[in-house]
Each structure stands twice: as C-alpha cells, then as structure tokens.
Length: 50
Image (cartoon, rainbow, N blue to C red; front, side, top):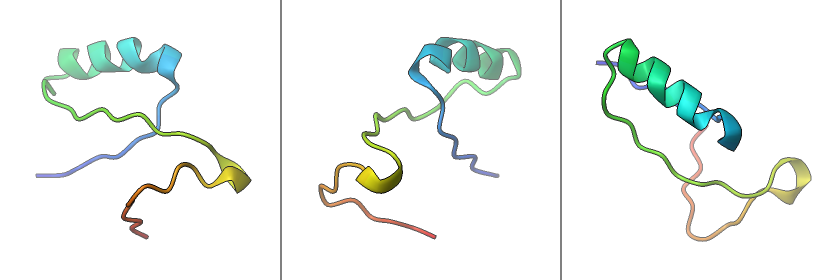
C-alpha cells in the first residue's frame, strides 16, 4: 500500500477527485490549508514531517 500526499488548488479539486475515482481510488482525505511561503500557514498544533 502506498500513500500519496498532494497540494491541489481549490479550483482543480473536483477534476482531480474525478480522475482518481476513474482510476479506481475511491477514498481520499481532504483538508484545507492556509498560507504559503513566508507566511508558514496557520500553526495550530500542526505536526510537521520532513
């Protein structure tokens, strides 16, 4: 089993979800993220993995 993590633009999410379903991947976990670059996002108990 393999796990894929990807950051997808909100406007592309339906397209990617449909493509994954067509390829046979019916489950996924979606979460909203905030910020980018120097903003470093919203740090609310987030675990960072390298």
